[in-house]
Amino acid sequence: MERQARWQDWVSLVFAIWLFLSPFIFEYRDVGAAAWNAYVFGVVIAIMSIVALVERRIWEEWIDLIVGIWLVIAPFVLGFTTEPAAMWNHVILGVLLVIDTIWAMGQTGARRPA
Image 1 (cartoon, rainbow, N blue to C red):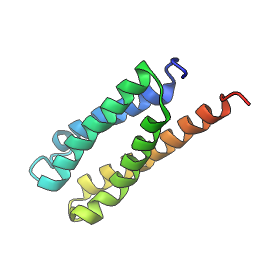
Image 2 (image 1 turned 90 degrees about the horizontal axis):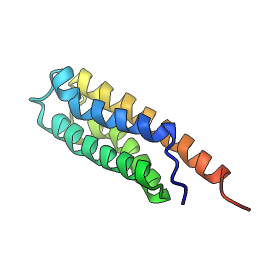
Image 3 (image 1 turned 60 degrees about the horizontal axis):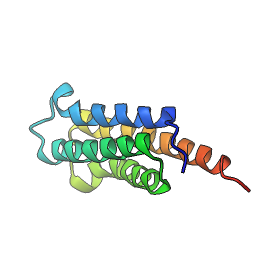
């Protein structure tokens, strides 16, 4: 597998840090579901990013893709749509993570030998 780190892995790590810190930045740390979702999935994205920086595997990209989709729907499933900062942070970050991951998957596919 390819061991060269790509910029998308670093971007995902920045997203992870942002997501984890966002309950403090946007002051929704007291909104249980939103805050815990940010903490848990911030850690998941960080772990996947670090693993990808060490040694790339396609399953990492799939996990990031699933997490990105989850972040978009989480405010509706977990019921924190009444908290605009938490909701929009999750939705926008989820969309950005999906775009970043699809871009990374496209590069991985383009580099495979025929």
